[in-house]
Image (cartoon, rainbow, N blue to C red; front, side, top):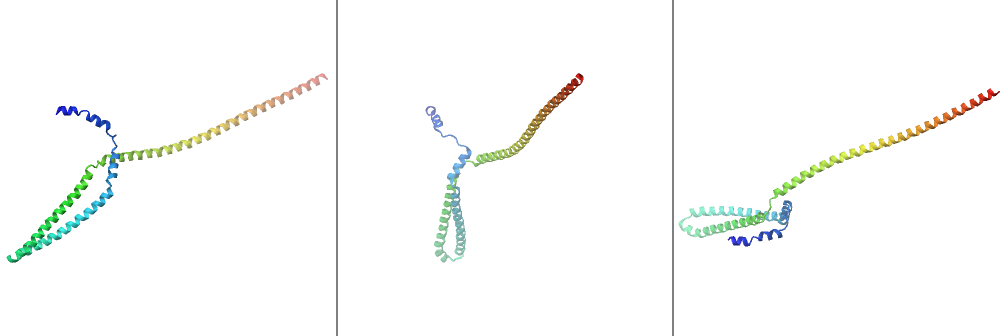
Length: 210
């Protein structure tokens, strides 16, 4: 026994190397239910359910009829019982056959859906994963909306600051122009005063010479 186990020790390694990559729970559940064709199975179950209900109704009718025939048989005279016995026995045999067919049909319907659902993967992990991802997506969308609002506020503030900076630059340029104009005016005034002073000095010298 140990030798057999030892000789097949490389089997799992080969299986591991050739095994297909593991799939996520969502893809496994999705692939199963895609192949399962739920709507088609529901249609089959509907037909089977209607047939089971019809069989139950027919069985109830047959049992009531058998009950009546049995009561008639019990009330009948010994001579009439001999003639009624064969038909009553046939009725019971038919009902047993019908019950057997009903049971077989119900068992086959159950086994059919059971065999198909037996390999069904548990949908809870996949649904839980989807719900978790949906929650994360909602949180990300909410955070994204907040970031968009903040970004718009930053853009508005940046535009306002740019406008202020542009105003400051214009004021600085105007101030520089005014300072330059003032310097030019001062120079002009100094030159005028210097010329006026020179003229007065010249006139004073001329008066003195006379």
